[in-house]
Amino acid sequence: MKKENIVLIEDDEPLSKMMVNFLADEQYNIFRCSNAKEGLENIRTHIPVLAILDLNLPDMSGLEVLKELKREALPTEVIIITGHGSIDIVVEAMSLGAIDFIEKPFESERLLISVRNALERYRLVKVIDEYDDLYKSQFFDFIGRSPVMQTVYRIIENAATSKATIMILGESGTGKELCANAIHKSSPRINCEFVPINCAAIPADLVESEIFGHVKGAFTGANKDRKGAVSMADGGTLFLDEIGEMSLDTQAKFLRFLQSGNFQRIGSSSIEYVDVRIICATNKNPLDLIKTGKFREDLYYRLNVIPISLPPLRERDDDAVLIARSLLKDITKEEGKSFQDFSIETESIIRNYSWPGNVRELENVIRNVVVLNNGRIVKHDMLPESIFSQVINLKEESSEHTMQINSTQVINQSNVSETSPFKSLLEIEQNAIQEAIKFCDDNIPRAAALLGVSPSTIYRKKQAWENKDV
Image (cartoon, rainbow, N blue to C red; front, side, top):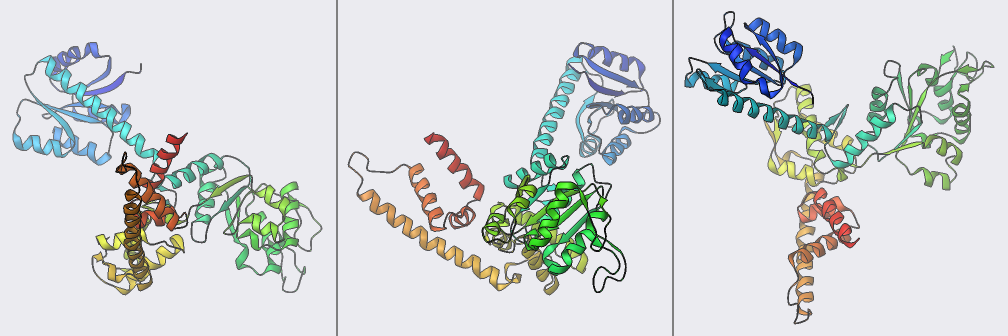
């Protein structure tokens, strides 16, 4: 088993040796230091799990050492030892991060208990930190802790090191370009270019030129040679957004490029070779585009090697509130305003609104609020009327439907046999949730809003029911 490092900073050599003897049977790596400077150097070098620190040192007080450790945010627990303790010193030492305070003289058992407690605390903190790492609240430019986004983060991390093409699917405003950029930044291609092209924003007859480039005189208006996106992205990543808008003719040429890795600029007879990672995206169902003849099936299968589906904001639990807070902070700073947070009512509205425009709509709403209002707290009446009224209507539907559910339960209970005069609370809860889901056309986030619970609660309960039935 790996020994844990402890740095002992004590200028009294006999006491220092005695403490090392006290801890001899505990199998630690102990680094003895006689002054603060030496102690800090050892802590920075060995990053110990624990530092045992005398308050009265020849070159610096123990409190100053504590301040330095706190400033550098070193992950080391600290036990203070002194022969001149006072309540004020204890309070200050604890506020600076010390977890225990031992007065001289002391018995070996007192030191052992304190050290063991400190190391147990260190291990618990480490476990908590590792647990928090599993649920990232931010991943590159993404913000969100919901389980569905944790899945997206893991796919990005796993896919980033591959050369395989990726297709990102998701509604408008869900962050498809953010996703592509995160893949690029997580990949070995990070030091080369990330080149985004929006096929829907370019006239259809110019898309091929944008992607492959052209030579002077290739067509009217081609006044000079021009590099295309594939050349600019050589060694890096090419992101084609809204690829479903690409013409069938350009799709055929792009398919040939994917198969061979080479291309020709428009008007050129020279063949060029590049090494490019291809990521594409669309807010439409590619299979529907294939059925209607707007997208080549062979190109789809070439591009859809690793699919990533970005969930709409309404399916991301409380992520809307997390994103709104981040946007509020950034936009408030941009506009020179003083907003700091949302009222409880505003937060509830943000959480329960369906956000059909996803994160892009949320950003527009927050900017609207900040620009048109003043104050420290965003109140519910500062939100656009359309958002406020939708949530109010949703609550009214919830109230009405709850009455319908209750009426149904009363009728059902009146028909129950004499041997089972009541339904269990679990049955009533399950019926209410199933009725709400049915009422909302299987939209679980909307059903959760009707019932006043988090969508994750319903997902968890559904999973428990399904496992019970297996």
